[in-house]
Length: 560
Image (tube, rainbow, N blue to C red):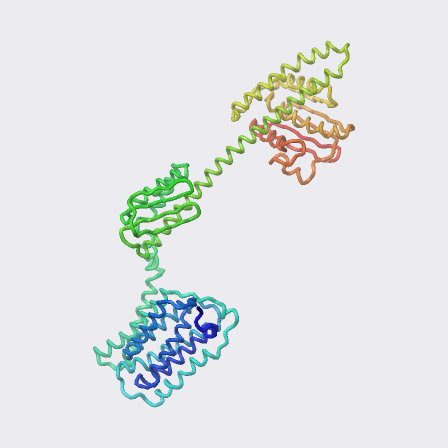
C-alpha cells in the first residue's frame, strides 16, 4: 500500500527546504514555546520523506513504525543537547548525500542547507547549551528571521527534470566522518568553556583552529611527497596484507599456474593453499564439474561467485570489512587465473582438433591426386588402340609402382601425421615421372635447366605439382583453349612453376589464398593452404607470382 502518493511525488529538494523551515520554526524561539513539539513532528515527517536511506520504501514497514515511536520518545525528552546531536546527524547525512552531486543547482541547494545548519548550531543551539545569557537584539533578530532566507531560498530554487529523476547516492563513510567532526566541535567547545572559563566565542575559535590544524596535519601525512609513503599508502598496504602478504599469494598462485595445466587440479591446489590461512577454518569450491570442501564449515561464511567458480570462505567469527575486501580481492584473482586455465585448455583442444582437421584435409588431397593419376592411366587405357599395347604396357609398368609407392606414403602419414616426409629424389628422375604421369594430358612441360645430381623433396613436389595442375585442369575443362605449362629450374635454387592462360584469381580471394582455408565449390578449400604449409615445413615457399588475365602462375621455390 502506497503512503500518500501525492506527498511522495514532491521532489526531495522541496522536502529538504520544508524540513529546515519546520526545524527553524521549532527551535528559533526556544524549546518552551507551545508550538515547538508540533513543528518538530512536522520536521520529522518531512525528514522521513526527504532522507535518502529509506526513500524507496513504498509500504508500511516495522522499522518505520519503530522510528516513529522512538521519535515520539525523543520529543518527550527534548533538550538542547538532543537538538545539537540531531543537527549534527543532519549535517552528516546531507554531507554524505552531497558527495555525488554533479549539477550546479543541487550544489547550491546542499550548500545552503549545510550553511543554515552550521549557522543555527553555532550561533543559537550551542549558545543555549552554554547559557551565555541574553543575546543582543540584532543577533537575536538575525537568527530568528534572517536565517529564514536560507530555507526559503532552497524552496525557490527549481530543480531540472533530470535532477528530479536522479537517484541519491549516500557516502556513509564521508557522512560519518562529518558527523564526528561536528560532535568534536560541539564537545570541544564545551570542554574549553568548562575547563578554562573562556568566553564561548573564544572557545569556539580555539576549537575550530585546533580542528583545522589537525586536519591539515592529517592531510599532509596522508600524502606527504617527501620520501614517506604516507598514511594512505600504509592503509592500502594494510588492507592488502591483512590476511597474508599479498606478494606471497600472487607468487604462489603464479607458481601453481605454471606447474599445473588442468584447471580442476589448479583450483584444488590453490584452495588448499588458501585453507592454511590462520583466520579461516575451511574453504569450499564448486565448478561446473567438481566441488570439494577443505577444512571445516562454520555458520560464518563469505561467498564469492564469478562465472563458473564459486568460493565459500568459512571463519570462526564474522569477517571484518577489511578482511571482506581482502577475501574478495583474493577470490577475484583466483577466478581470473582459473578462467585463464579454462581458456588454455580450450585452446589445446582447438589446436588438437585443428591438427586432426588439417591432417585429414591434406591426406584427402593426396588421395584426390592419386585418383587423378589413376584416372589419367584409365583414360589412357580406354583411348589406346591395339597397336599401342606395348606402349600402354610400358606406361603402366612405369606409373603403377609410383602410384603404389605414393599410396603407401599416404597411409604412412595417416598413421604418423606429425612426421615430415623428407625423402629426396633426383630432380631429373622426378621430372621424368611427372611428365610421364601427365603425358596424355594437354600440359606443356618445360625444363630450362636442371643441374647435375640436383635433388628434390619428392613428397612436397608431388603434392604441390598435383594440386596446381589439377586446379589448372579444372579451368581447362570449362575452356579447352586454356594452355597449361609447367616449368622446372634447378640451378642456384629449385623453382617449380605452374601457369595457365585462364581467368585470374579474384582480388577478394588472392590475399588469403595461401594463408587460410577459403570457400571452394570443388573441395574443402584447403588444398593450396596445406600445400603452402607443407612447403614452409620443408624450407620452401609457395607464392602466386602472377595473377593477370591470360597469365596465372604459381611458383614453388626453395629458400636458397
